Image (cartoon, rainbow over all chains, first blue to last red; front, side):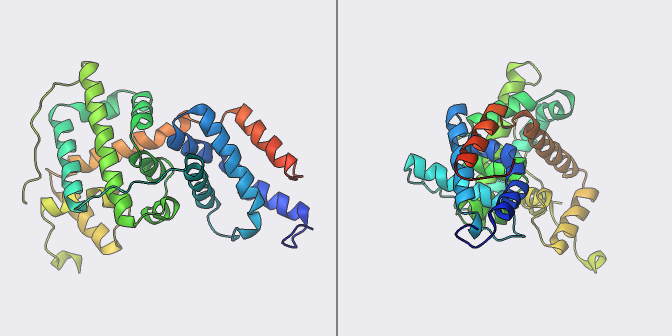
Length: 200
Length: 86
């Protein structure tokens, strides 16, 4: 028996079945926070150690991956003793329009075609690594790890509206990096004018 | 019901494009935006681009997996902590 009254072998089997399969996901998220393989290694270990020690607090049937992400983020913040800076985003809809304008630019200079013609995985991975916080962890959670805005809001400890605007900004920065990549690689023309959405 | 609802204008559709792609709108909104994106020749390519962009981002998942040595270290740490699962 352990402290919570659960037989140890049941607890261990539950933990192995529900938490261990997400090590790749936790590693990716840890890497997105630390941007450093050695720190990511430490953070994954710390996350799983904390998760194991507090396994009795996990609500069975809830999302173990989200729970691990939350532990990972808290461990990261504690390890850095970092005071999070909130990003002020005044108007989420303006962010949405700006995102659409970036897409318009990519379409105008032909960069969007790269998405189907060229393997952009390595370039996009690099751009993701270089994305600044808090945009990187938000994009990783929603776009790579498939978390909903609600789930990301819970993991990151910020309102859903903040998740949404960080996501828009992060994606826009990634698209800008892809445009630079396309220009440098000679795939697209520079300086194409932006096109705003027209009224139907 | 939807047939009687006026079609969204392009600006509204673009404002909701990413929320639509992320599946974060209400079912009614999802339908309205889908209808606009399907019927509007100007906005449809924006949706195609957004879907492709997200697909490429998701694909980066495969490029970064937890290295085996890290996995082994985690398991050693957990065993030292009392995990008995083999």
